[in-house]
Image (cartoon, rainbow, N blue to C red):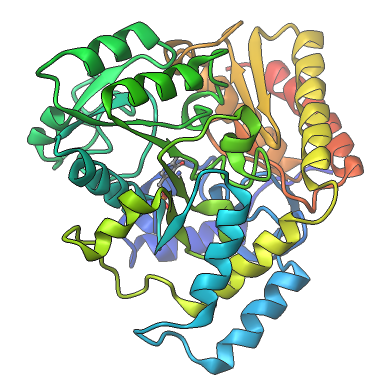
Length: 429
Ligand code: PMP
């Protein structure tokens, strides 16, 4: 049985458009097809919408819901904290308790700074790098996302004028001067910039796996190459592990690839869906926040959110979590590849742990440019067919698995993917 229409969601969409900017709380959500679906709740890997339809959820709140919805340990930890108050404006022990868990899991980290969102955490990481080096600019790779601030948004996607520079109307054009854009994997260009006497580069920022633009794993030796270049030039290496942290390995990309940056930015999976973010790294850099580097935030170190962080990190320390992620991620990616091949759809499927990316319309898509060339119109129609069959996915082709997704859920999803492909192809453009 397929879902023909979503009357309650449609009604809710009309209502929210009259009170929320663009009808949504985050602009991108307005692009979900055929229109945003409105949910009443979730349990494990499933979400239920206002019309009573239940879906296997591969959106997972755009990443954070790594334990699935309503995880008992997480819910219990947050419930225990709730009657004790929302925030204290001073110290409490959860701050250190969760920091200790982070430090124990990510090699080379000595201190943690708590923040609320990835966008805030990347900004303080840049400020710290500038303060530590006395330099101003930084290297950013095209297609990498480090939040929506004026500076960080440069070079993420082609902007309103079609060029890969400013990404948003209203963005400060001076942001372009803050950074040098390099193609992901181009060590030579990075070396030229870092070694040029007047380049003034404080930091190299990267998503160690380029999750936001195709789930592209780092070319062999590339992360180590960045580490060596940064060591040789006194530049701060920052891994933005907002997506990869605690997801593609127990210590994220740091343990998966065995390369230690100076600073690691964390968010999403760290608190299972609650708004917690962090910068972790070397004490000598991070301790500067009480020595002239401003890092502020009313909600930093919020106890409710840290209770969630503590329980999430405990759940992720259970045996077999990462082995299961690897097996299920591989099963999903292999199943998708087989279905795409069977239906003769040129495509690429990338997978790193529990993160999978389907790039429709492009074979061997191993660059940001190839990712941008994906047949988005086809994938949108495929996404609607999957939604009609009870599988909820992100618009751009990225899929997230939680610990709650079982092998049987993946097998069911692969069957739905296959059926949805057939339906999309028979329907025509
Ligand atoms: N960095 C990366 C790699 C991200 O994927 C994101 C969010 N998608 C951010 C930073 C920004 O995080 P937030 O949305 O919490 O501000």
